[in-house]
Image (spheres, rainbow, N blue to C red):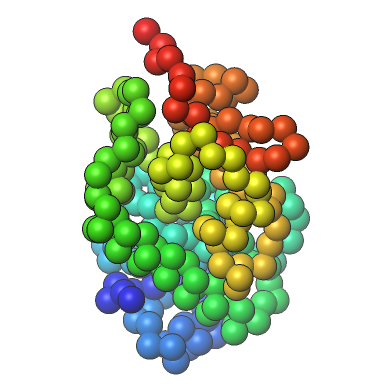
Length: 237
């Protein structure tokens, strides 16, 4: 589904080699980095199909690298970390990460998650090619062909999952989706997690799209049910 490499960034040689060998056995091209600065440089020069980031690395940590990558790219980012605290997982997702897996992990599970994210992106790209009409809601423009979101004439940088979530909701305005429905549609069975992931991505989208995230115009919460995209709003002057 992709001819672009996967970037693996981890300063632990054994873990880096384990991930690299596991992915190469599945036919993926892999480029490896062992510190943060090297990882960021490789991400910028090789345009990888997916990035696997250790959180704790010398030079720059994984969270910093993720923030920098998100300034120019919506490539899927998967964090691997020995830190298993919920706050670290939430931080990684808020910074634009798409997934988080704790060490020690099963190589089989990691490869399954990689495949799932690449497959989702591939399916989204195919869908965009088949239906590339931009969605326009007032000053908000969602362009699947360019994989781009514009608001008030300014580009809004979204992660791959944030874009998928927004695009899906906006394609079906005023339809209410439960958390678990969105989770099942946009994440894969191989993703071991909970629907809190959806809440974090909704939070991220509101921060980026809303003038007042506490009173959202676009993605609204239907208390006790889920979320919907609202197409009946008035643009601010």
